[in-house]
Amino acid sequence: MKLETLTDLYIHELKDLYSAEKQLIKALPKMAKAATNPKLKKGFEKHLEETKEHAVRLEKLLGSHKQTTRGPRCKGMEGLLKEGTEMIEEEADDEVRDAGLISAAQRVEHYEIAGYGCARTYAELLGDKAGLKVLQTTLDEEGATDKILTELALSEINIAADK
Image: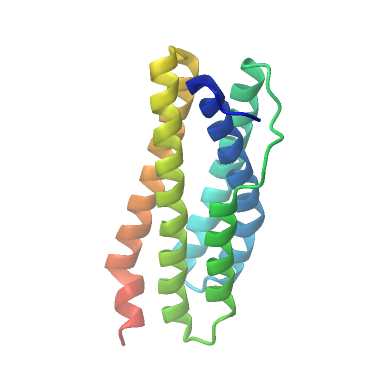
């Protein structure tokens, strides 16, 4: 796809986000399985359900623009998830691994926040009010997940890893 207009870039970003979400849907169960802290495990499981909904929203949004979800694989998410897999496989104490999983998860969240923020801005500039609303909803959810991870790290997981 040749990018000639902001609309082209918008569709490209939506497809990239879709690829990222689909990769994350495969990775989150592995992260949940690797987590030993019950709250972290539950958080990963909850975010898996949200992530599935994010993918559905992107499918509908792309469909509203008469586009498919097909596009190149999101290399950024691929790299972030590879790092997360390396953390899962690392020889580490359970508490330290959990702290590392939070770090890996927050990298993913920040990447998604950046992507959804850009797409939301494109939607706003292009007058796609429905897209703007959908993307803002997802952006808010990604931000909330990041905040929960930070609170969990500060309140117990990083503390346990420091003992």
